[in-house]
Image (tube, rainbow, N blue to C red; front, side, top):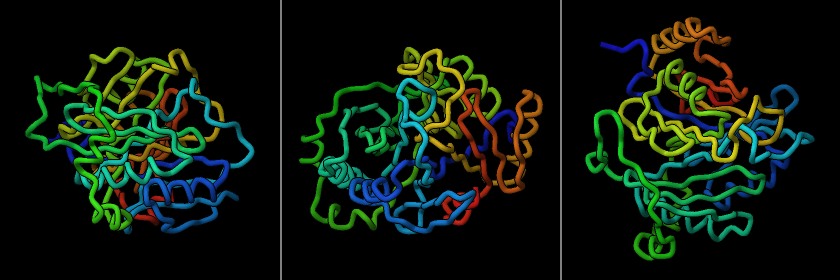
Length: 301
């Protein structure tokens, strides 16, 4: 029986939207650092929206928004967008590209027990995670909590083990998805009430100081929220950076269950039939949609 309080077990993350000041520079960066190619673009509300992806899968939507302030690392918003790769070779090839790109800033790498991850920052200050998941039967669960850690992962040794000429040569044809989105918030308890109690994710890790990890369907996390840089932050000002966190669910019934929870919680939202749009307590836009991984759907949101 479906639990009306929880998101469907097949819930996933969709293309992340970023407001960017220099559309061409950012498009070129993501092409060279992550092998994301422009798929389609459209003018909406006098702004150019450009979708980037691999193959036909959209992964980012860049909205040209010049003239507003740069990303403030102390403000609520994006900590990083996490790009998930199917194999260690695909991950290594993308890490190699990102490390070779002079506009990248490498900020670390970790073995998280459930995954192997590498972190960068793009030219406008948006965080990026590139990662690969270990098989689920290797994840260590205690009840509904999964064991995660941050153990140093030597990037040079990782590339020596997993980087192949074939993977680098075919990196643009490789797959990739948005595995999770990690947010900066003002306080964890308020984030839990919104993302867990109302949206319907389930807490998976709550032992990291100043952070919370949550998912649907037994994943390690689809969303994370931390206060490491943004503790006490209020609603976001209009700046470059995160424009939308996109979540997909299988059917309209899932949106109906969500809207019922939102009404119960007193949250305002817009129901556009194929998606529901609302804002979290820090004014970050969240879109929950029944259609995902489609360029037209991403451009229409």
